[in-house]
Image (cartoon, rainbow, N blue to C red):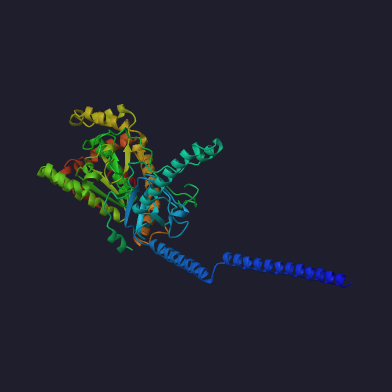
Length: 511
């Protein structure tokens, strides 16, 4: 019996020890789980300092966006500081750090932009010169250069990934091959500087079809694209000229008439004179017509606006050629000043007879081609002016033929109508649309003078129907010989609303 009791007590003691051990293990495991759970909760929840920092960042972002919107609203009524023509296209994205998301301006190459003021080093405030487009943020040349560098880096990464993907399985190689980054601008499109020296101090002092305001929808990748180049292959040893993203141009594109033949001969001069008379009356108070005797085709951007080339010209040029360049530069500056008023500017340019003469200038004009489709009609017109004009028949016919061979893309407007009334209406319709594109109601302060002149123009009657355009020209010739004979004695500027010597033409009587 004592042995049995001893064995029972030992069994009971062992059972109690096992239970205690099990309870201890459960307690330790629960405590361990609690510690892990508290650690997980600690790591999953941000601290109070992190939350406050995030709130501060969000508050600063909202405040900066509010100030940007206020500055954008004030810029609507500010005058245009300068205008540019784009050499590259731009499509904004969320990664571009736009001061206000969704209000960046997208544009294509060869578009025109009105710049109101400088927002910071990366962004300007302006608008696309197109009817219905509002003011927004436009990337500066520095910003476009940074975007171009990012595109080049992405392209290199894409090439590396495509090479590494080629060593993997075929399915992975197909996936990497289909996702190609946006190609960057070509090597010629250097976005580091402007063609013209923009006066930033002056700016600070002024301080797609579905999208009517041309604000692009948000995308994940921004792009800067250069226009397709149709130029011939550049020689290997020839240094490529850097093309800036923007070219500074007049705030209002000047209107230049060419055709039907050479200026300085009666038929061409009188046909252009009839159109100038029409424009003077149709856009009275909104247009400035000026005579330009200097050869503005010499005003090439690469010469007149590159200080490093001025010294080379001075060393290799004679005194007379320097005087010519100085006169040309003075005329270009005068045209820019006329355009700053945001009135239409029409140039009676003596030396411009072909659109190719203006390709390399900074004027970006609206080229109006007065076209006589039938060479026989032009021959009869020239011969009807007498022997003094008929002896130069061949020269005028060759010039007319050269204009006829030009592709239509070189001209903004082609007036090939048979009647003066139709040609005038065609020209007026184009210029009215351009006026609306450059003078949006929401972006310009009220101007009583312009409102009065526009109301007067709306009440004015359109030109009365006349006979064939050639007949109109011949009848006008007789009445204006005294005016167009002594061209040297004519004043340089033709002030709007002031009649020159000579009798009014039928176009004036009609208006």
